Image (cartoon, rainbow, N blue to C red; front, side):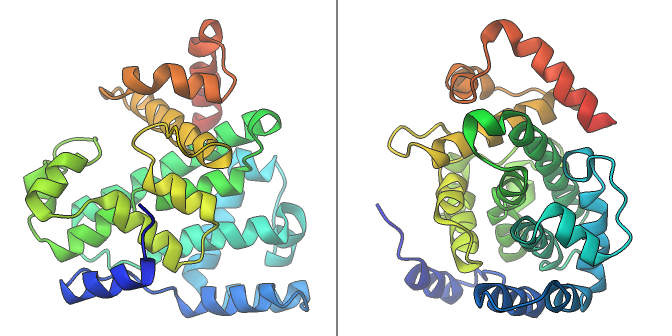
Length: 278
């Protein structure tokens, strides 16, 4: 069933569940970009108003998947070499991380570290499979940062969220069944609402909503993006030598969607891991 996003956000607010607002720098950036009447200097001025986002942007674009060994000395170079649309997508992803109060909660800090690492892996996979799947690295990075963003929203609303779902002691993601039973809400729907509220593309929002399974009703970009997320999650588990009990149920459909032959599976993991660890 389609979600009436704005109505649902109001209902959640009445229950004390707060969807994070977009930072002012992101709102201004999107307004300027939407006019089609701007100079690169206009965009760099807006981005540079937030030193935290600017610093993280430089860190992200220096990774192998975006930088291609290029050296960036200024925001203007980032916009020209990475591209304006791609840079704006990265800024959106980075802004989300800074929109939550980290304070002293170790679980929240660990969540964002894991999200950023998973986003890098997803971007590497998208870069490698772009000719097959037509999902670009910046889109995969953005989707991976947002795909579990419902978790910190619920962490802030329910003080016992991590404890009841045992997230402090495992590297796993929350169980949707357990969430619904304990809190009468699930992080996929919350993540969808955050993505919609932040004006992410519709196919990215839907991939966030359905990311725990390879959707059969949603084809094209949604299905492909979910497959990239699932493969990135599995690679993350392999790199960290953690169990991934859901993978066997998703493995064949994921690899098929991304055009990866079963005989090449092990070699592909090694290649992505090597690039991620470089």
